Amino acid sequence: MYDKQITVTSPLLPDLEEFNLMLKEIWDSKWITNNGQFHKQLEKNLAEYLGVPFVSLFTNGTLPLLTALQALRVTGEVITTPYSFVATTHCIWWSGCKPVFVDIDPHTGNIDPEKLEAAITPKTTAIMPVHVYGKPCDTKRIQEIADKYGLKVIYDAAHAFGVKVNGESILNAGDMSTLSFHATKVYNTLEGGAMVMHDEATKKRIDYLKNFGFAGETEVIAPGINSKMDEVRAAYGILNLRQVDAAIEARHQVAIKYRAALQKVDGITFMDEECGVQHNYSYFPIFVDAEKYGLTRDELYFKMKAANVLGRRYFYPLISEFSTYRGLPSATKENLPNAHKMADSVICLPMHHSLSDEDVERVIHIVLKNETSTL
Ligand code: T4K
Image (cartoon, rainbow, N blue to C red; front, side, top):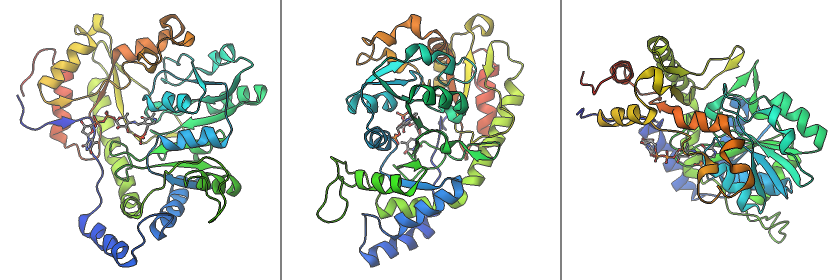
């Protein structure tokens, strides 16, 4: 057994001394939340960094999804993917809508646009796709279908921080996109999240909705929620933004090593890097074909675990398989064959900025060597 645990991810942390200086400023000002100076600064810095017009900060990546559904007055049925973290579907349910699952494209893991139209009914009002693992959805095709049927599109872009296609941020697609800044993400603010929108009026309304619906001292425009980011996390976020490019590059180097080492392993596949896409290397999923590889996905997963290498089976089980959702008509296995295949074969290998060469070697060694391994 190895002593050192290698986890699937590890948070990017700002320099503690610099953070302390900012904490001192917060302490001195006594302004600790409700649109403080660091909050305003981070929204501006993020919009600039991401290449988007407007950003509204949130306390996590779940509440902007819920707020987007509310802001766009989405009702009835919302089409979504079963291959995601459960928060995506939970928000649809919380907003009083019915989630409708559509199968994924087996190459990207994202909702298959060619299967969207068959799922649209007179009650459909929106589509909520996910750029899973930060891989861009086919935003052009999704928009064409949304425009044809008059549907809203809210992208759950929790994994897609900084991802661009041909130089353009994918966060600009659809009506709104949401981000997660959880500790496990490429860019984190401890907990945190954001919404990206196209215009100032929408930003203003979102800012009301995340502050109980208050539009001034005495007016409430809607039953809003409390989802404001505080000054401590905003300060932390300002510092982390300065080092996120270096962290993404470090992840890129890990991806290069995984690809080189694993490309010829019979029964192990991974996703291609697409031309024109600026990736963020947020995850490194591999897919196990048990017949060719000689071990099932779970056998490999537990073998890794025994060696203290904690990959994760993101996203197994599918959301449609959880007891809360499996009764939905769209949750049947027959409706979602590609999603089932991916969920049953995936392991996300450790992927973060602070993996050493030795760590990466250890991970590779376990996948390469088809036996309980000690280096
Ligand atoms: N939409 C999508 C597509 C999402 O993936 C998510 C979240 C959301 C929406 C919602 O966003 P948030 O409301 O969460 O901001 C994690 C995260 O909790 C969750 O944010 C994330 N997706 C999901 C994919 O993964 P767990 O249960 O796997 O995390 P946990 O605690 O097991 O951590 C995994 C590993 O990370 C640990 O083994 C070690 C490392 N770690 C974790 C934490 C929390 C650290 O080193 N330090 C830490 O503080 O859910």
